[in-house]
Amino acid sequence: MIQPGDGRAATRVAQPEPPPVRPPVPAVVLSALALIGSLAALFQVDIPLLWFLRSHDLSALQAFGDAGEKLGNGGTLITVSLLVLGTGLYLKRGSLTRMGRDSLLAHGVVALLVNGLKHVIGRPRPRLTHSGEWHLWPSLDSGLDSFPSGHTSASMAVVTVLGRALPRLRWVPFAMIAWVGASRIWRGSHFPSDVVAGMVTGFVVGSIFNRPLRWWGRSWAQACVRIAPMTVLITGLFWVLTHRIADSLTDGILLASGTALVAGGLVLRLTQHRHSSIGPDLPRGEVSESLLGLGLGLVTNAPVVIGLAGLICLARWSGVSVHAMQSPATPPSWLNGSLYVVGAIAAVAAIQALKGLVPLQ
Image (cartoon, rainbow, N blue to C red):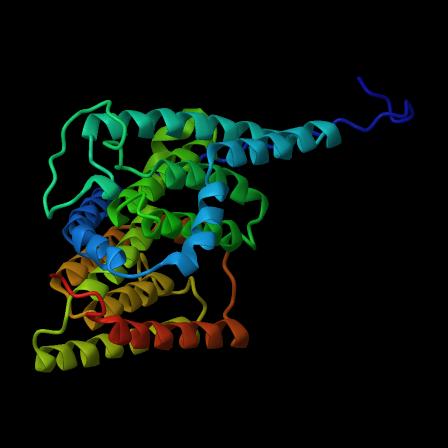
């Protein structure tokens, strides 16, 4: 036993880590359907976006694309993980050591998984796609390994693990992932669906390694529920870009209806504590976010996006969401409320401005 006066630090009893909350089965199923539906929708717009990119000179973005490629390169990611691991060992910080180790493991697992999927699916890369059709078939040939994106999946897995060191600035590394994913598209290395599939795969694998492996079942279920809204958001962006407004009257009605739902969601969010309840088992924050999501879906005037947004809302209402279970209760502030209102208004305006900019051919 360590004595108080022997010059050594007193031993601290480590508190056991609580297990992750198990999401309700309906929430996981509905979220999985939203993920599958999002990828199916993206497959429909991959080729038009490819033709659009080929018809424009993107040389000005080449430097940004090259930087994104290097940022998501396996060597860069391994170096970052090793630096975190080495720093943790040198400073004798167990948390840093575990993060470095877990990020290396997550990177290795996602690399094996994604490379296996690439060759089982055998999707040709954009540079080998010269018509509006392609055939998916197992292949070991170079260039028939587009789906999913390896850079995006590996980057997302590593960032998901390392992001727990920056709980308040987690958006910074995830913004870098967006850069990596976007660079893979405009460089012509991958289709949008490849990048989104890589993002989902990397997030699920990284989430599993964020917790002890004995809880992997709960971890991957949580990851599906948490990543589904972002996937639908990205899908909605690409769908809006590639589809023109066919009926201005219908668009006006859906715009008004969606804006009303967004306004209702903002009112609920700003008028009372986020985790207060409207009724039994119905947190006000969940209703607010559901109204905002469904409202933005209606604003798109796209049945596909509205349906996907509806699945997300049903997933949230099927039980208390993972986000609500894990997020600390924070009272609304004037600054946060103002930013939320500005963000919602900007989202509605952006959807209207982006409609049909890259119409389907």
